[in-house]
Image: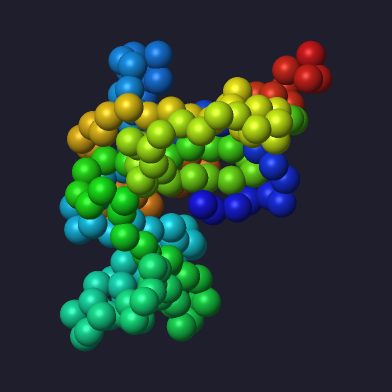
Length: 178
């Protein structure tokens, strides 16, 4: 999860790239980012040209993953920007990204769903989950191939999501003024 605001998410929506329409998806289908090395990542977009190269270089020189580590951080020595890589839940494939929004529509977080709880048994709701999570929790049935499978494509995907969020906020502000 990439936390943007320190607020709970009141609603969830599937992250979409330009031209994608969630209404065209069938039950259990989603748009997602592709993984072909069993590794996913979040990275600072300001260093999107250098961080993937640094990560690959570290991979070639030896594993940047520490023992018992579930993630790997690579930092750009010039900008201080970082890339945080982690194993994808089910290996290669496609994984959805969910946008969490607060009650005012502001983005609170991005969640890359690694589908590790895909086959988990549903627990009975508790008072807390019934009021906080169950109406908004995303549900994904199956995986689907993605149109991109490289760190660069993933960066483009995240950039597109940020652009869509900015556009959405501008549209909301415009509607509130009218």
